[in-house]
Length: 200
Image 1 (cartoon, rainbow, N blue to C red):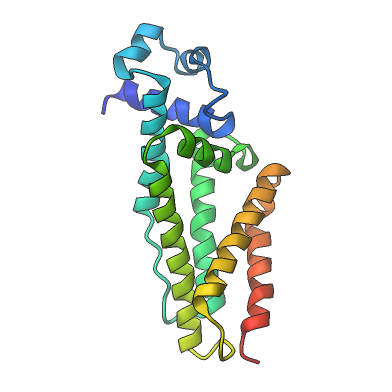
Image 2 (cartoon, rainbow, N blue to C red):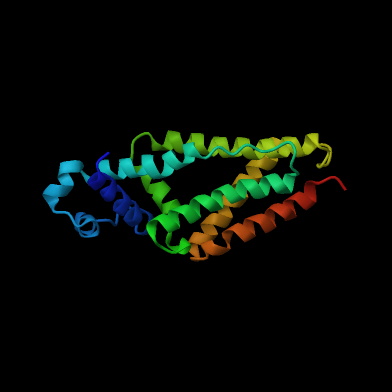
């Protein structure tokens, strides 16, 4: 990939992540990249094509590179800390890469607009969510096998609850521009749930 094309993708990612795809105009893209219209269209046919490449590279590319595997040697809380740490590291990496504050990243808007405007993204997002849920379910299965959980706790149902809980906390952080508090709140809530399901 040419240096100029990668430059366009990086600048566009910053705009799409902080402003939103629908709000980003061609003039904003040209100003951010420092290119003429001809220079832009030499690399991309449209804003839509650019957005599709941004989504593939920065969301699905990063997601495929990160492979979290819970450890049987770790406790539930240690594995859940690792799981949440992986998510936090991705946000921190994006913020550092873009040179913006963590709270400026509007990840949910980015994904919702990707689903709306890029064909095939919904199926990829569904697979991504399924894999995250599998990771949480595995954490709970290991905790049950290690005797940490009460009898009758169903890993699949609790994993789904954790997914919804974490999504809610992350969305709340975006709405209130308090994303910097999200990791602490997620860990606090995970411990509260664990206290209710752990073997006494």
